[in-house]
Image 1: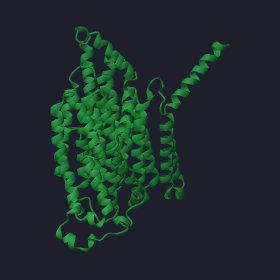
Image 2: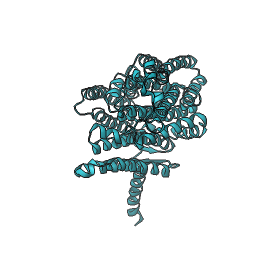
Image 3: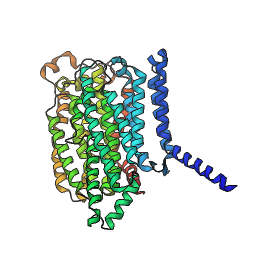
Length: 517
């Protein structure tokens, strides 16, 4: 009798564990469909229901992440994992999605774009990012990167009839298709050389042949060639998603052409998810000395930092400047992975979390200026805004100083941790180049602050310097969601700079989970 019952019980237990491991993602998908369902009801679709329903869905998902924290789960035969690594990254991704929703309410209304479809795409994008960072299988990684990319393509071209938005989406799609091909062929070569799709099984296979000396012997030559080709192709696909030079060309056009809330979402959520899954893949299958991958990453980091900063230095459009800045920031973040080890990886995670708050905050300020219909994206138009809108200008200055890595901000602590790990690993020249690039970055960030607080004489003498609204906030251009986003971003950017230990401990626990094999 028991022999007949045990298989059913085991099957039920397996399903329960699998479903438990994806509850946060499932909640987001459920609310994405609920929001999309509102399109069948014209009155509900035109109201603010999609906005509030999206916020509720993100709130429930955060709640489930906290409830599952401390558990070590895996589901669907090891294709999905959930541990402290996912808790950290899910929290960061959900914050990124929360900011994207909060800043979109008035922006969507002013742009006359369909609401439910937009918010459902944001939620689907969040779920794909969460599935991506919890993926432990080459097929799952590819499918979730594709799902995430498709939502990004649609959102980038969401301005219907806008040539700049359509062009940006088309360029993003075409280049993204090439990146997907590199990822797919890389996965094929890795599978052909190892015979496994599961990352942990690939890790065990590589460890056995590395310690057994098979790669160095004649019998391992075929494995070495296929594996090297696969890892190089896989790295190329990841470099595109992480906006690393020379695979960055989609970034300025996509960031500039997309609706600004979408730009903020891509600059934070997509970059975070791409770096997170690359960190998992790197620690499991790139760490074996098949070829000098750290040397390749060293070059990618240097060229990304240098090109991004020089291009940003020459840019006069705020969105394009922040786009080039994100390329440079990707180079800085990569230093932590190159430094390696426990502290390098935890420093990378800390930097990613800090990057979300300071970048989302900066783009929120840009949205406020866009909503005012008075200020273009040209940096020269920011002249005198420190007098006219003191609260908004001060907030923008703080976020820019954090991006520059000025002390007492989260950006400074992020750079400190990743640079320290690189120095400990002997990458002194890489850190020196990064410090020089930080000085270049500080120049163009401070250039915007100077424009806001040191206006031209005509601007200073005009009546335009008089404040409008409470705290100098632009009348009619600021919603509750925008203010909430600014306050949250300011709070965490300051807290992570002054008292980073709470967050570095959180990152340490997350990084430790990478070795739970």
